Image 1 (cartoon, rainbow, N blue to C red):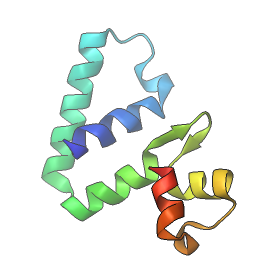
Image 2 (image 1 turned 90 degrees about the horizontal axis):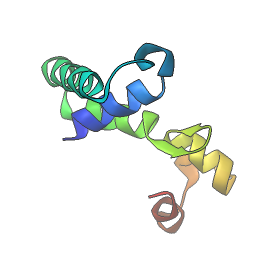
Image 3 (image 1 turned 135 degrees about the vertical axis):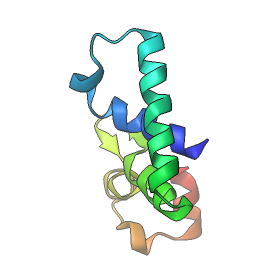
Length: 87
């Protein structure tokens, strides 16, 4: 399931690639991208991609950017409580 979330978020980050696609076409595009991820990436690589691309608010993609923007703390310096706030 995470692979399809990565595909969806990657497409959402590239609106010029999907503008004009019908809902069904977009779903098939996400499915195809998810299958490509399944074939070419390991689970840790997919998790890393998701954490890097996840929508975290207007103009904010990925946990590292969200950490800097919302908490003013680099991702690697977050406390467990701060990390929980991002989720």
